[in-house]
Amino acid sequence: MNKIFSVEKIIAENKIGFYPSLPRPLKSLIKSILYENQVNVLLNNFQDEKDLAFINKLFNYFNLSFSTQFNIPLEKLKRCIFVCNHPTGILDGLILLKILNQAHPSQMITNDILDFVPNIKNLILPVDWLGAINKYQTRNLLNAFQSDRHIIIFPAGEVSKLRNFAIQDMEWNPSFIKKAVQFKRDIIPVRISGRNSILFYTVSTLRRLFKMDFNIEMFLLIREVFNKRNNSIKVKFGSPISYKTLNRKKLNSEANRIKDITNLI
Image (cartoon, rainbow, N blue to C red; front, side, top):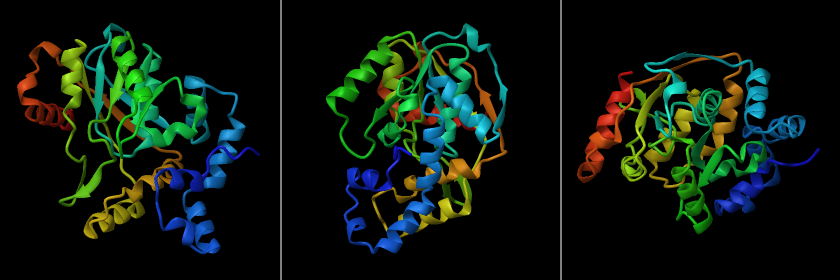
């Protein structure tokens, strides 16, 4: 079996300094928690499946279903930016890629940690959320925004957290407002209903409590996909927001406005 997903490789790339010094049993425990073996079995079984076919296989494997609600038929939308809340992580993106690509070619801006999944490389635009975006990533983003494809963005940049006794997104990065105006793309707000495990929110809360900068809970997101087996997820699409109505001089307020619209869908 090919080792496509390597916990040690990802940890090394993210420069987590304490990992190499851990005792071997603890390293094995971490790999088990992160589902390294299960992920590799899955990726090896589906290694010949690409793009939408691969996503369909995943949905069948996990017996996942979803319901959708639209204010306008997707077939009528062209060159839009879809902005969405981020309640569960990886699954949010896979759902939108599946729905949108059935109607119109679409790509998703995502954390480059998903680079280990070659099956969806044509559908994602990986960027380094933890550092500077390199020239290769910048060029890919420019080409995507200049194309006729839909672009999917999760403006929070990370998965929803437990805040004030509620699961909610962190602050939305307003860069999608600039992109919408620059490339003359209307914005479609999308709301996904869902939540992660108690373990995920506990780790997230403790990290912030101890003021740790590194997003440790990010490594639990694959585990969260496996935890969603047999789930049904609601996806609601709001009405288009014309790029002509956006105020580039008030980026943060515009981002907050669209975030509020999304939360009310």
